[in-house]
Amino acid sequence: MSVTSFPVNDLLRRKLQTTLTVLGLTLCVASTVFLLLFGDRVGVGISLMVEGRMTAGFSSIFSPFIVFLAFLIFIVGVVIISFMVFVMMSQRVKDIGLMKAAGCPNNLVFGYFMTELLIVTFAGCFLGAIFGIVADIVSISLFQCIGFEISQKPPNLWIVVMIFVLFFILALASGTKPVLDAAKIEPAKAFSPTHHLGLAKQPGFRVVSKSGLTFRIAMRNLSRRASVTIRIVACLSIVFLLVTVAVAGGIIANQTTRSWVEKALGKDIVLIAHRDICSRYRLLQSKFYEAKESPQFNYTEGRYLVPDEILSQLGQMPELSIDTRLFMETQIEETPGFVLSQESGSTTYVGDHRKGFSLIIGVEPGKVFGQWFMEGEFLNESNGLDAVIGDTEAQKMFTAPLYQNVSLFGKVFRITGVCLDPINNGNVTYVPLKSLQRVAAVSKPNMVMIRVEPSTDRPQILQHVNAIVTAASSEFETFEVNEALNKDLGFLGYIWSAIMFLPLFSLAAASLCLIGYVMLTITEQRQEFGILRAVGAKPRTVVEIVSWQSLMVLLSSYAAGVVFGIIITLLILIPEPVITEYTVFEIAGWLVIALAATFILSLYPALGFARKPVLDMMAQA
Picture 1 (cartoon, rainbow, N blue to C red):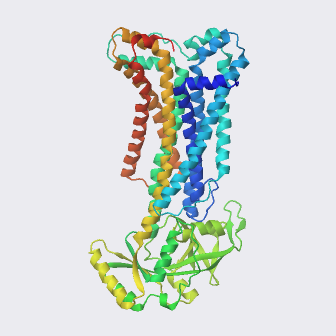
Picture 2: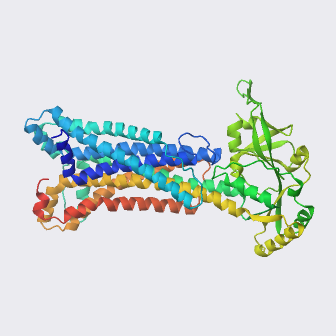
């Protein structure tokens, strides 16, 4: 018979305990694998690099968020396996005492339970890796079904192997100590719950009235088992920290990034341009969520310029706000700048002469609809040689953009700001319209954006606008920018939804930990509960005592995890967060649901135990 037969049979004999341990580790590994694989596909993974979609500015928000969540999930996994092994060994101490009383040496006992730990750890890590890959494939399929083209490349197996090895080594290391401590225990102490459960007698506890009986018993039991109580509180605190960062951070970051996109594009904007320009505009906007190649396009052909009759008739409509723009693509060049040190007064030159292609957009600074989240300032109304560049362009081509210039059409423009803009995936340069017309020798804009005043009849006015455009040229058309805006917002929403789904895995694993904790406490209290039942207590009294214990542990963990999670989210992960009253209620609702679900699941062992006959309750496990 194989040397592993006895440990395997022992694990199979204790199905619930083994399942809880394996499932807890599986959930943690699966969530980590899925998070990193999913981030790698959408271009916001641990590489922190832009990969064809999601501008550098948005990626800089997603990537640290994903890395921090992966780190938290990893820590949660190690803590959970350590606690579950501790619970497993605490329930096996009497077995160890019998083995040692029969003459088994310490190394044989240690090897026996170490084999069990190896089997459990390998099974949890292996199943977690498989489920993580499956979850990644399913998520990409869902994205494809809703219209977003996400890379169908095979999963990055190096990420899977890395997570498997890290979890396996650290979970094994963290679980070795409880096994080693249990193997060293003396046979006499192994039969004493005072030793292996960390019990401490609390003098002075007297019940003088029936009121608050279950609460007082619960408080006494928690204080008697200070060691294991501290372990479970620490474990659940880290889990609730993870849940808070993922839920609160995900909701706040979702609303914040959506606000940036919505303000950059503008809401309820109508684009008027040649049908080819409109198609090109859709393509430029889609590069935010799809890695698409865009063939060269001549924006300044005469047929693409907006006719004067359209501009004049639109200008005569007081119900409209008008933003005229000139789009073109050309090569730009980084121009070095210098930084003056305020302390030493020395000058440091920064930058090089890197070149690249950029979408150039000429706008009238005082009439532009967009309001960008940016570093620096937007264009003023002087129509000078100033420029604002996109976030991806700033990262790819410039060293310190606010101290540098950009050259286009042989002219040097001073960079006044860096903006987050989804169009052309952040490879964009905004300059004053008149300055661009002058240096590019183009007389007219090729695009007009209009916004209807809210107090007017929008459908009727747009119908009149369509009539004006059609009468001027059959090749020009109108395009609702909300169509592109909704696609961008939908992409952000689906990504954040996928990220916010991850805490369910860790929360489920935490619930398993709490179930293991409750099972351990019931094992220690079974004779006490049996005596209570024998003197007339009802089964619900047992459930109430266990419920109070679980609730106090949960509330302690919940308070610590939520407070630190909110602080980390607002002060570290998300710059200038957008928070509304609805945001606060939504976050509070999800966190309360998480707390309630964990509490309800923790009552499962108590409900089963309370229905047992009195003699079965008092029998030794």
